[in-house]
Length: 497
Image 1 (cartoon, helix red, strand yellow):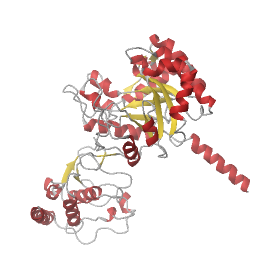
Image 2 (cartoon, rainbow, N blue to C red):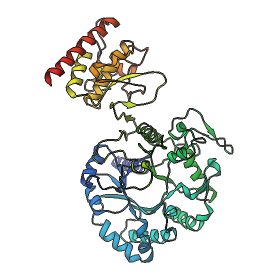
Image 3 (cartoon, rainbow, N blue to C red):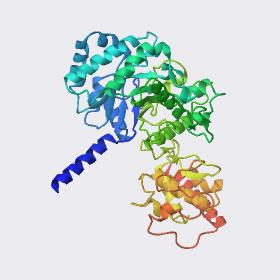
Image 4 (cartoon, rainbow, N blue to C red):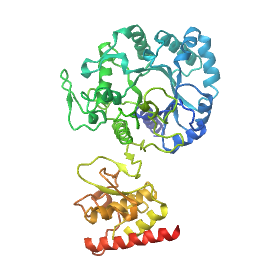
């Protein structure tokens, strides 16, 4: 019996190891002069439950900072180091001995990228990539780490000569001398083909051919591949499938694809009108959900796809248009440019703190994160008391208790009052602490009331032990009471100041 239990447990552990599902990581670029220290970055990454991180070198301070954090690192060998790594095996051996082994395995390193988008660099160093990769792999083999740390190289979509329709995807023949041995290396060593994909650029450069909704995962229409009949609702999937088809044409069917950069800028030059916080949040929120759900692509449904969002911080030293310096999820002071939930449950609105999902013609009322804690607490106390809102859902162990913060709890209470009282502007005032939004703040089993539904919906009700008691105040009397309390809140605020 014990033997069978051990065997079953072993099979389960093997299953966990092999079937982990798609993951979301973040790129930690450091082309800036105002970033926080690596140890503070490590704390920020853990705070936001980011478990996978890509860095572009093997900076010792970064490796030290992420020791014993559980965060898995993808480290890089810059293009400027390709020549010495390709020329002598001893250079790769020494680098591994001095820069990696002293920090491994306390610092979890799972990938080494040798070169980055070399076909795009001014001094094309593509001829050095494969020899450098081979030397790095040999160094890993010498210390028995070649199966724990995978070696690859990242590419831009420029390696493709054609990406639409996806079924006609093909690699650029001018890179054949570089790509053929690269793909052979990847296939032999079960390493992924790493690609950097940016639907933003496709839209920015061809807005008449690519719709913004299609680029943002928001399209309600479909693009048909005439050769396969496959239907595409977003550009990301289309570009990924183009790579899969290009690999298939060259008979490299077993190589997995990994997206090592993708994202959307939150700010741009005057002509970059799509570079906004809202679009950036929408793209990355939809991307994360798409990946975490193991949706796959039309050509590879259910296929695992690891994706790294670019980038952790805005980087003020990056050259080029304004957008180049504004891809970050965080400002250098560690405050959010806009918030993302890396569990895939949805983003948190950068102004209000409410989770966002676009709706059609419906509005909600949520609390502003700019409001003071005292004003919010007073408003919540009123809504859950004289305002006649059933606030059971935001009590401990109930569906809307987490996240356990005042903005989240206030948002639920404000919206319930707002919907119960005709969804009028005045019913979302709360002394200036309420904000109307057209995006559904619901998440998991916490369902926010909407117009025409004046009772807590089923997902909340089943988790609650009580429901609203006593008769509901009439609309006019509730609003009058609300105005009275709002006035009192303003008076109290004036007295405090």
